[in-house]
Length: 137
Image (cartoon, rainbow, N blue to C red):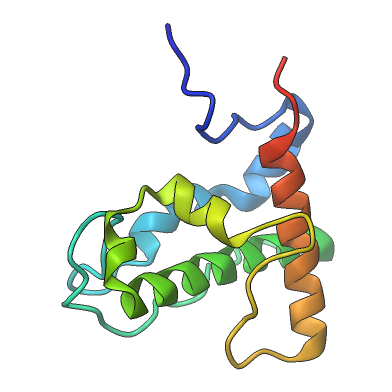
């Protein structure tokens, strides 16, 4: 079986205990859909509606993990904002959109965010960047 070297890596075994706390993350693309479709990468997003509700919190979780989950949702919102503002991005693969906005120093500047929110967001984006760029065995 061939693998694409640019595709997102699978979750390392060390992260498996946390998957139960982040289970709605796997539903992320669908959760960003309103009553009518918002968009899928490569599709027209002319029928955009309001942003989705924030992820549901099934049970209390460690604050740090929940902050990272919330920041990943925020990252998705910023990417969607970019795609809606720049129609040429609609043809770019989702993985490339993510790789275009995160880097070793953090993530994109969040709209209408406070300084402490940006710091937290950048921390998550730095960790995500390191995860995506770590050597694979």
